[in-house]
Image (tube, rainbow, N blue to C red; front, side, top):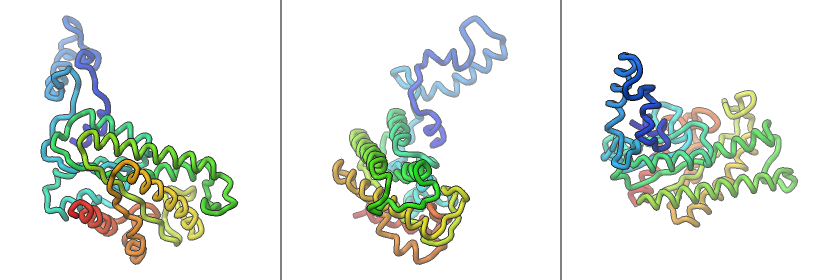
Amino acid sequence: MDAISDRVTETIPAADFATVTGKQAGSGSPSRAAFGALLLALVWPLIGCNNTVRLASEPAVRYIAFGDSGTAGRSGRSYPTILAELLELPPEVVANHGHDGEATGEGLDRLRGLLALSGYPNAEVLLYWEGGADIIDFMRAVDRLLLLSPLAPSYPHGTQLAEMLDRVQANIETVIAEGQAAGLTVYVATYFSSREAVVECDAMFLDVILPFQARNANGYVALLNERIRQAAANAGATVVDIASLDDVLHADEANFLNCNHLSAQGNEIIARLFAEALTR
């Protein structure tokens, strides 16, 4: 059902279903009519009383994990899956709405669509983890080879970087506000840093990152994390400070899948931090 909610991001007037099915009353071939009738029968349960399509209700969901590929999980075992196990909950209680490569502006639009579908009537918590894709997009635009440190006094793109971080912070604050308006308690997560080693990295031009490049990338991550913490403070959300786990994560390279994604073992470490935040 999560796949449905990711694909359907806006309400659709019920009157437009004739266009969707290609069937107007009294016209079309019998096969087209049969197809239209079948499609309408499948979709009809999703039509709300105000003639809009809504996500079929999933009353079991209590937690919405929303974010980029870190939430979706590249390793096969995502942190939301592990989180449900740690909380001793059935897997359907935690809905995974991670989307690879999604920046905060895109995520805000997607979250609005998800909340508008009203598919989780008993949801209580929004676990939000985005901002990393914004940083990657910015680095690719201004310094594809990561030759520059954004922390250096001579960094030439400071104004552009500040403007991008302003947008990210504003998007996160809006996400928090809209989640709270929907009755959700909102948690926002910071990002872990990359290992300063020669590591596979699909975010880089040659799919590999060198130690000095990772060091420069981590400067961007540090600046992003400052904005995530500030957004949470401004909007009244709880921070799940994944950045505080850097020493633990870096102690074992097996915690990493590549430069910016965790393995199943690494995901278990951050899932424990989410569980601790939720049970305080």
